[in-house]
Length: 321
Length: 305
Image (cartoon, rainbow over all chains, first blue to last red; front, top):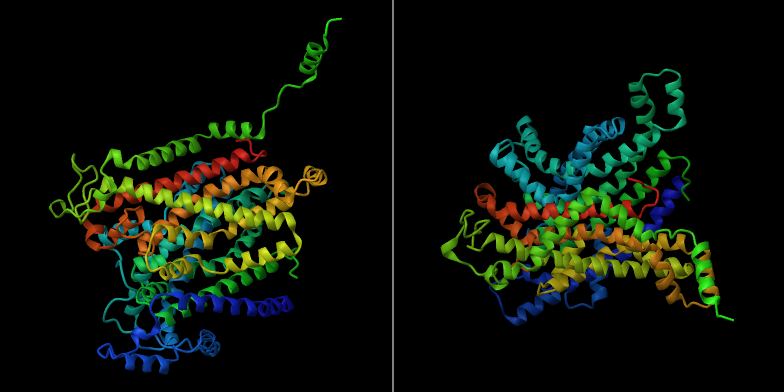
């Protein structure tokens, strides 16, 4: 297992290198360059502009610029944001906790809802409730996240006034107080609910089908023959076996939550990584954009590795090699 | 002697022939036609498509939907404007139909190019195996690492003039990987069959073997995949347009129409501007998913629902 993990991690290095080349080339291919945000906008003397270009190394050959950028990235330095006039890592570090809070709460909501619905559907398959749940699943699969977000804002923020529609924190609350925590929770619950409940469908279906399949197995027949109560059979024997495969979906979710947050965060103007990304593309803030693109792509790689490792962990029959 | 060979063989032929069994396609069609939800969805989808195609004769020409009409701003639904007008005084009903044309056409085009690229890559990798398979699949895996939405936005902003053609190109480039993997695995399983061996042994070229013998037998999988891709692509296009990275703002599309709901005023008090595109959009995706499920069921010989 350890050997496999190390081998996979080493195998990632050339892929990360290729990804960095792609990200860098894409950023270079975009119109405009890093200069526009950095110079004195009132001084339009061509000699001055040329001097600044030379000074910032924008006239160097492209591979020299790449090596310079990459040697910074290896040390964890993605350069400065032209719009925010701050270090990129600092900026990302500011926004990252928000996205993590949103992602973790969304995941929790997904797991809780999917567990409850899947357990019900699996136990009472082909009942009225099962059909209702599968109806909800179809709707959750079909409705685009931004439509769901709009409807949620319309109902819960505007008509009922329960939670605020935008931002991640109320104004004038001190960090570290109870108020701060409550305000944060109030701002996060709606986007998390939208992200989380739309993602339940595949989990619910997975758990339901696995439970139905398990209920026909021999060990269940044995348990029944011994006179075990039906509720014990489902809660103890079947559920324990069926819940395990779901864990493996976690790895894929890590990446999809960060990537999927782009739309949700933008609608709720929730200051996380996704919203920062959209802002930086619009403002042509290349260093921020490249940093986020790099980070999320590497995160996808890591997520896939975690998924593979979890597979081996929960199912000893799968040999990782 | 009378030449009786002709009728005799015919009679013998008809006698010894077992009752004609239905082809897999006919079986699938019958199963699909019996699937109520799928049929209702199909009717819904056809209605939406036909209305969108005939948007111009039914309502106003597409140039009219872009025109700003200050005297008709934010009118509630009435006999004159079925769904009311939006903040720029444009008829919401006309824009929903024209928007459907844009969104559906885009999704269809992207789906077709995704399926073509994916099938070519998948079939080539699966049929030839060896280093071809290795190289193509490594490339596919590599492409899979890029988070979809993120890189569509990055690629999209490279092109200075945003047009629907660049959008089709950008989305297709990033989304063929799933289809390629699926087709590859199906082709690999199918090519172990003896009819493929016999096709190769009588001298069929690889191209002919793939197109004439392999692809027709994995077609059912491709059709199901295409249906599900279509739904995903409608979501992708509208989502991108909603964020402002999709269809140019002057062309009506469902995503562009929904973008108006980002202003709190529209969302709060002018429901007729955003509810129609939202409802039609969700209904369309729902019906496509049901049709896809119906196909999957119909092509699966083991299911007998």
